[in-house]
Every structure is written in structure tokens, then in C-alpha cells.
Image (cartoon, rainbow, N blue to C red; front, side, top):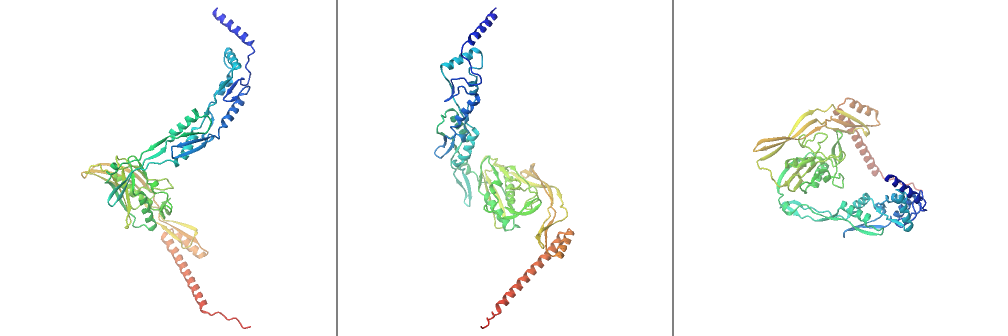
Length: 507
């Protein structure tokens, strides 16, 4: 009975409300609804959305200035910071007002709109990624990075240079701060916003650096057979590393320390390995620097984080004791200071063409403990027979010979002794070196068919020495012919100077 009564009551209310002239308009927003200063009466949702977006966009040129205390400012427009409509969901509420829901609620909403306008607020939105990019691209010029305390080794000992405190923009905190202000407090007018600046503390104190005085590891290699350019590269690379102070936990990249390989950075053309050949390149010989440093690092027992062997064997250290770096292949030698105190890297070369790296720190290892490194060759791979390459772009007589390289598979082992007795043996690395045959590149460009046939016949013997001999004979002959021609030209010039000029006939 109660259920029947409720149904009758609802039916009666429906009849009564249907008779009231208040009625929602279909397909448009009700009259009396505003979003900000925009009257949306009788507009479709598409029209309303477009009008609100245009209103928000009208603030795109407003200037917003980001401050880094007294260091500098970054000026941008609101559009550059990703200005957008921040509360688009309000449009759904606007469109449903007086239309969606039970009939009594709709009636009440429409009657309310007859008495007074209903106004919704426009919220501004911004793009965090654009704010972050703007800060990252522009704040760097104002950052004052801390300068760590450093060591300098002199004849009198170590000198300490105190560090300097810096100030840098905290990018993520600044992004959050700027975004919060613009989306919560910004009124659409030009404004100033402070970036979050943090103190950048320098590493190192005079007290900790004063303890750096013990030799942790040292190693020397010789480059006495190197020419002037390669010797210069070794010396230059060594000088770029010398004087490095590395704090606990810091990683050192040899490539970053010695690059770029340019004349402006002190490098010349010298031989280096490339695809089984020795070719001239800027910085050739730099791998002897990284290899010498690698061996000093091993003896200091620092943590090696990246190391590669050469493509072919080198002669200045045992197999598997090398460390190659190369710009083209991305090879680098990296290590980390895994000790409790800073370390100092000293590097120098001598007139006798020796390079030495010494790593100083605080010695905490037992005095009866000794570390050695053993190279173990697992396999020796003989090179193939000789190879001869002809080059029609090079003149007859040109001949460059590359020595053969034996291939190797090797390992390096760390051996620890206490009181002269071996207590542990650990494999450090394994290396594979490619083999390469003895080869010759010979020029065959000539207009003399006989000479061409002679050099090609030598090539057919597949003997580098035969090709070398024939090429040399033609090179010597060409040089002799050139010298003869030069002598004859000089003689003709001398004769011309001795003959008096002819007198003109009398008229």
C-alpha cells in the first residue's frame, strides 16, 4: 500500500512539474551560466569550449620572469611555459546543468538560474616539461658550481688549494615551485617567480687532503721507438691527466680527460690500429697513456669499471695488461676511487721517452701484503700468408709495408702474497687479439705498359719482399730520371746566362 502511495505521489509531481513553464533547452547550455567572464548562454558545448580556449590563449603573451636570486633572470611568455585550459572538466558540469539527473533536481537548477547567474572559474594549466626545459636550457649560465679542493704536487711536496662553495638552481624543486604558483595563484598578469637555489658544497678539506702522501700504485712504460709525433701525443695525453684529484666514489674517464683528439688540443698524426691495419690518425699513441694508467690503477687496487683490450697486440706491456681508448668505437678506460680518502694522479714523461703514472693516497694495506699481476697466454695464433693490395690511385714506386701481428688469447691474474706466500689468485680480465698478416700496399699507376706488367708480375708472386724490391727499383729510377732532368735544366739555364745577347741590326 505504501509503495502504491509513493508511486502516485511521484506521478502527481511529474504532472505538476510538467505544467510549469520552466524547461531545459535541448543541445545548448542553459541561460545564466558563465565561465569566468564568458557568458555561455545558449551556446553548444563545442562553441563554449572554443571560446574558453581562446580566452585562455589570450594570456599567452603575458611575461613571466623567473629569478635566481641576484644571479640572473629567465624571461618567458606564458605560452612558452605551456599555458593551457586547466579545468576542462567543468564543461561537462556546465553542459549537464538543468538537464541531467532526476526531474525535481533539474527543475530546481533551472529555477535557480532564473533568479541568478551561476559562474564557474577558469583555471590555468601549464606544461611541466616545458617549464623544466626552459630552466635546464637557461639556468646553467647562472649556476656557480662548487670548486673542489685540489692537490698539486711540487718538488717540495703537496700543496692544497681550498675549495669554493657554489650556488646552483635545483631544477626539480624549481619546476614544482613555478608550476604550483602558476596553476594555483597566477591571476593572468605579468609576474615574478623565484627559482629554488641550493648551495653546492665543495668536496675536500685541508685536513683530508693533507693525508694524501702515500704511493698506492705506480707503473712505467717506454715509447723509445716512437717517432716525434707519437711521442708528442703520449706526452700531451699524460699532461692532461697529471694533477687529477679524485674523491671517494668519483669515477674517472680517461677518454674525457684526454679528448678531443685535435691539433688545437695538442695532438698530431701518428699510427693507430684500425680494422687490422696501422693507420695515421690524430692522437695516435694515446692508448699507451691509458695502458700505463691502467697498470698503476691495478697496483693501487682501485675499482676498474670499464676496460677494453686493443684489437691487435701491443709491445709495451704483456698480453691482457693493456687498456685501449678510441673515439670511433666508444672504448674508454674508467675507474672509481673506492677508497675512504681522496687520491692524486701524477703523470710525467722523461727525455728518455718513458711515461709514468703514480697514484697517491692513504695507505691502509698491511705492509706484509704484496700484489703482483701475471699475464697468461692461452693461445697463440699465427698470422696468415702475406697479402698485397694494389692501388691504381698511387704512383708506381709507392710501397708501404705493414708488419705481421700474431693473434693471442690471454688472461691477466691478480696474485696476492703475504710475507712472500701466495694467499689468493683472481682473474682480472681476458683478452682476444686478432691476427694480421704481413701486407703491402703498392701503387700501380703508370703510363709505361712494361713497368705496369713488371709490378703486376711481382704482385702475382704474393711476396711482399719481391713487390717491395720492384717498387723500389722503379722509385729509384724515377728519382734518378728526375735528378737528371733537373741537372740538364740547370745546365741549360747556365748556358743561357753565358751567351751575350744579340745586337739589333743598324738601320
